[in-house]
Length: 210
Length: 215
Ligand SMILES: [Zn+2]
Image (cartoon, rainbow over the protein chains, first blue to last red):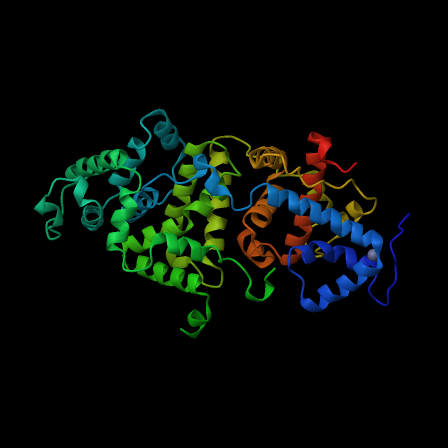
């Protein structure tokens, strides 16, 4: 082996140091081990070079736009996405679509097949719950209709289907931001935007900040 | 209740939103979706470039999450749990369309037994002997979009398991433990897979763009 790295610095040589470099740069080493590694890097120029190489790649990824999603609108959720997903979820759509149905969805109008699929799965009770919530969210886009709020008289599946189609059409026409505005009006907690920011700090280990 | 109080505020809010959703509050689920939709779109775009497919996959991710919400264990964060569902949904989606999302998942390097219980195993170490050229940081004058495009093209060339660890680490900025949770593997395996993924990324990048190698 033509290895010019140091093989011994006490018990912590290149063989011990090199495997730790990526974890060190990722902020995943305990302070004790990071200290040993730093000491080794000061003494050992080949290992230092390896660490610099690894750092260069890490900079490459940083330049690739970590967290720069907002700059790419084609990858951002469309307006009203969350409201629509929540509505579907509460209507019993479990998000598993057999191949043939998906092909039909793609061949036809984009939302039609899925709409039919989840309407078929509705129970009358779920339909009533969903409609009341949906109406609460977007009452400005629908004509006032007292019967919709009468939970003791669940609507028939046919009328549910018609209503849902109307909702989807209304949603398609809705101006961007309208759904979010409605959601904030009824939300008992912090605005979704604030929640999203808080979410950014998710998924970290407390003791392993970088 | 003590464990919940020790959580960070964001995690605590997730837990209450989950509980409210389970007790039938549709708006709480909508808020959960709003909270994570951007990050899910960002994650899934690494598996398909088609905006319609991205939206479908993210929607299915949240619908599946809702259907399994009662089984969400609070040991992992809601976000990592969601990532796991999203990645599986993206891979399923490709399978169902008879598409291979990636180069072969059966990567020859992986069958050499370098990965697994031994963590940073022989494979990783072997790759380390003999120094390969370093990547230069991109020129400051280069458009970020250009760099992004190159990065995505290189990622697309990598086997799915390598692409996934790089995406979780380099774009989602995930801690090793969270990556281990998402992927259902040990931290040692995360380390060695990440090491190999970076080496492969660098190799592919310099193969496609030798101009980014050091002089
Ligand atoms: Zn050394």
